[in-house]
Structures are given as C-alpha cells and as structure tokens.
Length: 358
View (tube, helix red, strand yellow):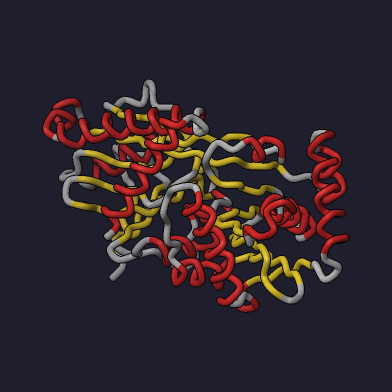
C-alpha cells in the first residue's frame, strides 16, 4: 500500500516520500541522476531486498535533485544507495526530513557516500569505507589508446601481437542481456577463483546472483582460443557507465597477459558502444592507474539526531570507530601487499571472512 508524505511547513518543500514502496518511475530516474550501479534498481533487486523499502525524492527547480531508497530498522534509517555524491545542503535536507517525520529514529546510515559534513548541524561520524577506480572515456578507442603512457601502449600492442601469432584462432566476443551464456560466466568465475586461491585466499563467487544481474544489465566479454574460453570479464551497464565486476583467465596462458588484454578490449568496446565512464573496481593495483583509472573514495556516514542520541547509541558509535581503524589497516596493508606480513594478514582476513560466511 502506498503512503506518500509531502513536506510541509517547518520542513523544506519539494519533497515526496513513498513509504514502504518504490514507484515504477524511480528506476529510470535513479539512472539519470546517479548513473551508477550501486544506486540502481537492477542491483537492488539482485543484491538487496526491496521489501519495506521507502523512497525519498527531493526536487530543485522542478527536477529530482536527490533520490534515496531507505529502510527503517527500529531506531535507525539505513540508506540503500551507495557510491553516490550528495552535496551538504541536500544531505541536510534529507536529515531534517527524516528526523521530522520519523520521530523514533536516532540515526541515519550511509555505507558509501561522497559528501562534506562539517557544519551539517547534526553530530556525524564519517570515515573512508570504499573506493573504486574510474576512467573518463574519450570519444573513440583510438583516442583512448593514444592517451595511455608510451610503455603501456607498447605493452598492449606487443601482447596482442604475441597472442595472435601464437594462436591464429584467438578471438573476442561481446554479449549483453539474454545473449549471455551461463557456461561462459561459470568459466570466467572459475578462472578468477583459481587465481585468488593461488594467492593464498579463498573466494566463491555467487554465480546465481551474478547471472541474474548480468541478464538484467550485463555486458560480458569472452576471449576464445580454439573455440574454448580462455579469459573473460563480467561487467554491468548502467546509463552511460560500465562497471567491471569479475575478470578471469586460464592461468596456462599466463605469459600472454590475457587478463589485462581482456580489460583493455572491454574498455575499447565500451567506448565504441557509447560509454562515457568505465569503473575498474576497488583495490590498489598499478595497472588501474596505467589504464587512466583515477581513485574515487567513498565514506561511511552516520548522522545522529543529537549528541544525546549518539550517547544512547554508544555501541553503534564504537562500531563505527572500529570499522574506521580496520579500513585504515587494510589500506596500509594494500600499499605494502608484497611484504610477507601483509600477505599473511590478508590470508587470515579471507580465512575469517570465509568462516563467517558459513
């Protein structure tokens, strides 16, 4: 049942809130406003639940300026949108609305947000939580190749020529939507898991969910040698942006750098199909910078109704401090990931994470 509130006197006008429902028009509006996977309905349907989710819409000059999907969990509002930017006036506007119409709520939580909070008017905890690397794409694949560093261009040409000379049957295919074959995706995920396992960690990709999202907005690249999958990548297309998820390659072709060639070909094909941005995902790896990736940092943000309510929720405040310390440690370890102690720490982390998942 739709229950829509409109802000009146005492709260900024031009705000609508659909309680416990997400109206159909929001899917296109979210894409137009944020152009990002982690604030899109296809992603929410597969990796989140839309049960009991409400939709906040604020307008400026007759157009949506902020659209936030959120769930009320007891005395807390949890925002689903991630990897988005909100300026401080719009963030304050949302906080004022929530604390006015949800008098039982003590705090509002964002998992990955780019914003500024000093002077917001409410007690806030903010710490770095996620990152990704994004490439601003030029108009043509040739222009992209020309924009790369001299050694990177030479390496790409050398590896491409080597694999073509060694394997005349080598070819690349691109699939979208219902063209995507589960067997191809399964092979790519298997290659990725094998490489991660060789590095001392363990991961099991969720094939069912990845396939569901791929069928909804996927963009899969598959490299073949003698008709067999030798590498590939699973990506998602939202608006004018492509988001890289999983890249894998058969390790018996290690010397041909098929993984990096796959990423390069995916970027070039994305440009040819009209993409304006390509997201390489998180983690500090040198090749992302060499491909013109620029780091985009996002913060976890918690906004409290008052200092008293922050004290009442001291356990949650302490949890945020702990998460900030763990995040700092992980980033430090990434910067020294070749060091033995760093490798041991990551193995322990993935071991504990795997046990927690089971």
